[in-house]
Length: 79
Image (tube, rainbow, N blue to C red; front, side, top):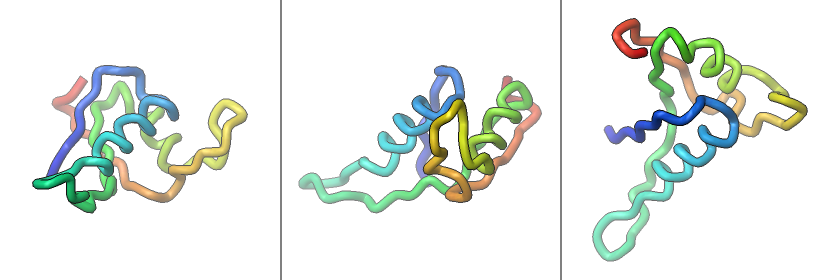
């Protein structure tokens, strides 16, 4: 289990950047680790944005290519 944390606004572009950071990680000798992004953990303040990223077809007139590719877990102890 690996994570990528961010204090950036939870939106389509920043999620894409964080996801690319996670899935693009490599191990020894540059071999890809083969990580996937299956869970987005957030606090209550980001729940609406997280659920929109997980389920919406379009976000701000942009096709949401991440729809249905991960689940959302809201943790009340996070901001």
